[in-house]
Image (cartoon, rainbow, N blue to C red; front, top):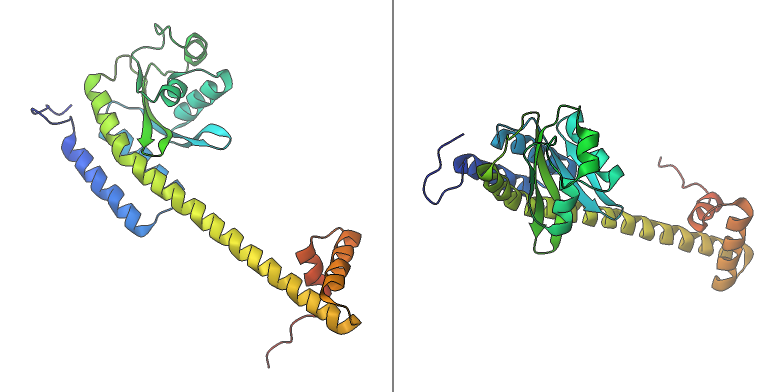
Length: 242
């Protein structure tokens, strides 16, 4: 491990490079998956004693491992979610880092530690990803050696998480906005289809607008279709260009 200077975090130079690389991602508007993959890769490289790293994000369905560098990380996380206990879940709940020096002697999460014994995992360090909007999730590193992480690694991972959390929050916000934009486009497209179908029925059958809309709904129910689908089936195909 690099020797600490007064007032500096361990691996501070590496963390500065990580921050610069992460800032570049914001400019290129990478997807959440790409950001997560980068965060997990850099976390493992930043703390060399880690045998694996992963990120848990909080979503509508609760916490879920969204990126993991190895099956060991994913399996260990899955056991936490299944048992409802473990260092990552506690870090999420309390908004504070959690560390296990040796799962064979740890007493805080007895069921999880017992379940994980035998997999090769021995020590864990996890810290929440906190932003002004709250907890986005947690980042964690695992090792197959006991006592792999100490106070210096806690500081390093906390500093790393402080840089990663806003990036993940921005990437998720961009992804949500993109999904909303696509749904909005679909809504407008459906509305246009229904408007055209009403106009078609009004012209063909001499109906007023309300009656034409009721007719379209009746056709949709009869055929087991949504109104936009019924409109698409009703409208004549667009003429092909010469």
